Image (tube, rainbow, N blue to C red; front, side, top):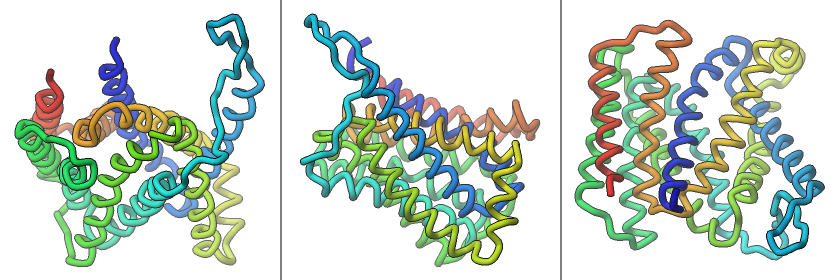
Length: 307
């Protein structure tokens, strides 16, 4: 498998993992507030990343030249900070904030439709910032994949919207699109593990502070009681270790090796996976609109990246 194929596989893996995260988010949110769930998720992910760094440095493997090297390469010392801090700012901090509050002022179906234009935003920023050449086929497929997501929401809850909610969701689209840009830019100096480490260091600090403020006076019921629930612990284990550490390392690895336009269009595969996961594991209905929408998304992604 060549480097491009590995990168595409890594991006698909990351977005597939995100698709299953909705199930575990629903399970966790039955027990506590979204801010608590996100804070615990990010803190656990940051702990997991530190364990990977510690044990990865302790384990030595052959370097192929008769010597030994650490299993994990990790060093933040002396590296430029601008792009990696912007990476952490847009994802996870601004994206999660805008997505969460955008849904408050709209409906989840409307929010999902707006978030689906991230691939289009990725193309715009790929041209404006990365100065990449984008094929007309990629633009058409990005638009079609967004239409596919919109079709999957037909028959779902009412498409409630508001101007404020729309503005906030467009902030999420901007942040989600710029994640791919700054993942690629910071990838010139940082490996995927280092990028993900910085992202969750900032994310855990910001969202822990946010959760503590929101839960003021209710720490026992909203935080400690949740941590005693096996359902909550198992859910955030998936969200932190798999849907944060593994997924974002995969995305950071893949984005560095393909264009922003190529990487961002796979974001809408998350919708397809979440529909399938909901049907298989939560026994949710599978409508004709969802079948048509999912088919359009998959076909669009395929033709956008077909060599």
